[in-house]
Structures are given as C-alpha cells and as structure tokens.
Image (cartoon, rainbow, N blue to C red):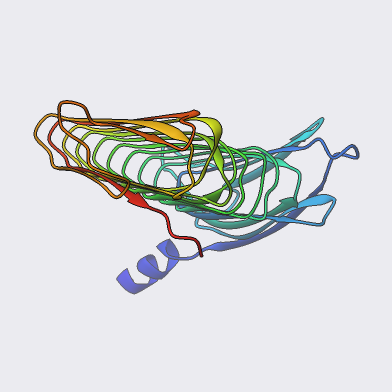
Length: 278
C-alpha cells in the first residue's frame, strides 16, 4: 500500500503543446515554473512549442493574447507543482522567465531576456539584444555576444563572458568575472565581500567602475588602452603591470587617457594587469 502511494506521488504527466507565433515577429513569451527546470531555445520557427513533464495533471497552462504567449505551472489546493519544461520559441522573441528554485537555461534567443530565480541557477548562451538576470542564491552565467548585460545576485556567483556591450553586475557575497568579446563602452561591477575579475578591451571614452569592500579586484586590459585609471584601497595591496602606483597618488594615464577607470576597495587588494592578445 505504501509503495503504491509513493509511486503515485512520483508520477509525472507528459506535456506537448504548440501555439502559433505572431505574424509580424513581435512576440513575447513568459514562463513561470516554481520548481523543476526550464529550458528556452530560440529557433527558426513561427510557433511556440512546450514539451516536458509536470508532476500534477492539468498543472500546465498555456494561454495566448495578441503578440504574447504565457506558460505557467501552477499548483492545486495550495500546493506548488513542479515542471521540467523545454520551450522552443522564435529566435527574435522577447523572453521573460520566473522561477523559485528551478534552474533556468536560455539558448539562441536574440530578443530581450528578463530572467529571475530565487535559488535556481541561470545560464544563458548565444547572441541577443540584451539580458536582465536576477537571482538570490543561484549562480548566473551569461556567455556570448550579447549587446547588454545587467545581472545581480546576493550570494550567487556571476560570470559574464564575451559580451559586446555595456555590463552592469552587482553581488553581495558572490564572485564576479567579466570578459569582453569586443571593446566595451562601460563596465560597472560592485560586490561587498567577494572578488571581482575583469578582462576586457575598452572603447574610447569608456567608463569603468569596479568596487568591492573586502574582496580583491583584478582588472586586465590591453597594453594599447587609452584610459585614465584611478585606484583606491585603504588597507589592501596595490599593484600595476603598467608602472608603479603609490597609495597616496594611485593614478595611471594609459595612451591618451580618453577613458575613465575607477577601482575601489576598502581592505581588498587591487591588481592591474596586461591583457595579452590571443
């Protein structure tokens, strides 16, 4: 009897649904999965297709309105249902995904992305117009030629790799790593107790601000950079591969000094290094 109850509780229901995409390619897709997992894939299609499983029959709702498809896994009788979903969308779709603990994976989407999870990880790959991602304790990894990246966490780590546009990242205790796939116009990275590592070329007139209270800051940029660099640390070590920096006058002028770089830490070390060409 107990075995029958256990097997029933663990049963899942397969889902396979489709909805047509907007004829003018202006499509928004929202996905809400409290737990389980969700993967969104951009493809050369004119539809939205949802496959996978849910752990409660009829827990999945797929609804449409002009220019929008909404996908939600909901609970019954105050019980949150979980789902493991794969959602295929047109590449140009704007995607909005929310979860509590479900890991979120997005691949090949070129439209705007707004992703939020409480404790689930967020992973994004491909090119696109931009991303806003938020997580409290889940790690966030963004890879590919995105034109804009804004990411925040509390304790999760942040990786932004090969972006080609402005970067703004914030964390309380999660480490931050940023690398550019092209010269970047601006980088802002702030954390309280974790490290910040940035390796990127800069556009002329670029603005960079890296700040950590007790974590180390490492900033690598090419030898031929043009920027005015100002570094400030109260008790941390200070080093530079571009020449000596004194604690009472921690400034460097690289090239014509057209960009502005500010590096600040209270007790963490600051290191400025050369970014070697590949």
